[in-house]
Image (tube, rainbow, N blue to C red):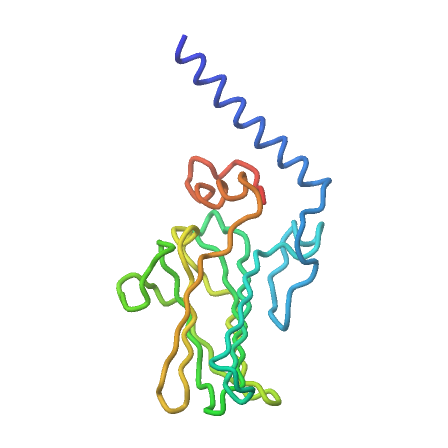
Length: 201
């Protein structure tokens, strides 16, 4: 009897997942319709049908009340999980008006949402990009850096390196799917057992 109940429960879970996938085909999800700034985001079947489908995290910080103090603006775009590779692409646009030239920006991920910036072992560096001058801004763009699926519920970290060798970092929680089923998919979708299930956002 217990075995039958387990089978019925598993069948109901699969049917609910399939029904959700069908709903996604007809209901436009909330969120931006175009990739932000100058990031080139790979096209997917979902983005072709609905428009832009990334998870976005933006932030800005100033270092004082004086308008001459440097300001940093970032936007991180997380693309859907690549189930066969067990990774998901991250893209970062980092800009600052710092008077000291920005040399490069590095991007790292962790598997915990509370990783300490001083704990070197907690972070995995996945990409770096040289900065270039654009008007009054220094801009560095990282395109489609592959983050391990295990970082899904962790953090990302951006680090700037200035021309004088000084560094500064910030960390934020990884952007998550807007739905419960989407978050479940991002957590277990790369496991071989679930490769056949439809991708939900």
